[in-house]
Length: 314
Image (tube, rainbow, N blue to C red):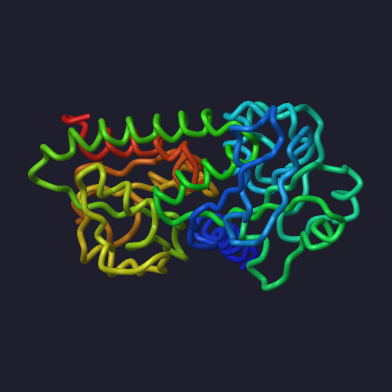
């Protein structure tokens, strides 16, 4: 029972990180500083809250791993003074910085760090309260970035962060690089006439979980030129063994990393032995962070998936 509860909690965290809110278009305001005359600063965060972004940012707290990765790749790793517990192992962070629970952070300790800005995920408000309200009340800039459910939303998130940090060009370069790699994959996938069917598992037995439309991972499957067996469903869904076996996917992909060798576990499931993917040995693991965090690194997962699904094409 403890193991099942632990898996349920982990799954809840993963899904909330991915789907806490739909993206919103950014709103910006020209700065008046003559030195930064060409820089624009957002008026609202991605959750549509009004914010006042400091013109100079030297200390950052990031309370979401997807945001942390973007900040590091924009060149601001050395300015991050604290992170959430899921960001602790991200390369490029200063050694020994404190970490906090994104759901119940110690507000007093956060305020004592005196950050110029705090970036937070919409997951932190999933229980209906704002655990970072004391930060806002102290006059510290608090920017919420709910995880996007589309690739376009991910582009917008990256541009919001780069606009806020006054490095819009760097953000645009990251976005353009994503678009280039996606276009390269799409060019190949457009030539594929016999589409394979895919089951993507994000939680293993006994609590099978996957997704349908309205999730960026479903978009990624489409880009590769394959078909999600659950594409007739919406968002994140619990599924049954019977439904997957009946759908008989050509390929099974998992990003489950909380059990030992998730691929072998899937291959050994009772009643799944006649599924095409199992019979042919087409069961693969893709990088957990790249496939679950809604930022530019989804391209890494996209490339892995393409090679697994269509090895002769990619």
